[in-house]
Image (cartoon, rainbow, N blue to C red):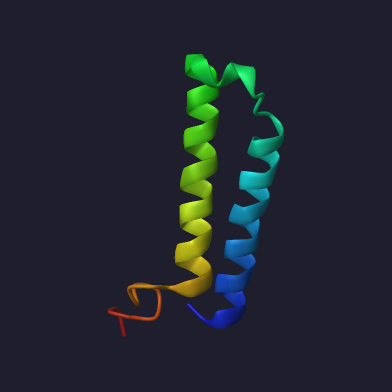
Length: 65
């Protein structure tokens, strides 16, 4: 995956996290739906970090040449 594709996908995941973060309410984190939304925000941010920074070199490896 080249750098341009990684930037696009990482930006999309940041957008998903931003949209889901706008649906969070401060008092609703005690409910199941609030915790599920928070989990989605955390996972989306994790995926954005993986795509933008590639910390373990997973995306830069190309095993199927």
